Length: 75
Image (cartoon, rainbow, N blue to C red; front, side):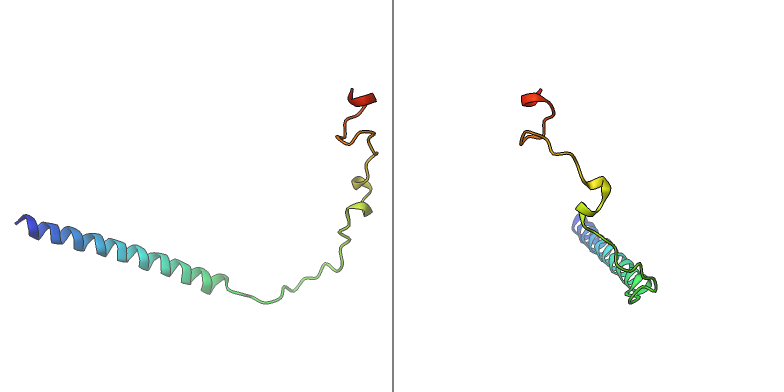
């Protein structure tokens, strides 16, 4: 009698694993089908200047020491 319940337990475990795999694949297929590749976007921002030195906020006063510590000799 115990061996029969062991086989049922193993079968139940494999069925649960199989159902979880089906759920994962179904979710992945759903995401692929819904999101998918829609091609090029319809909007265009044009050319954006992306050079740090061209921004007025990107230019800083040079500090006298290589560790960028302000003051006389790191004070």
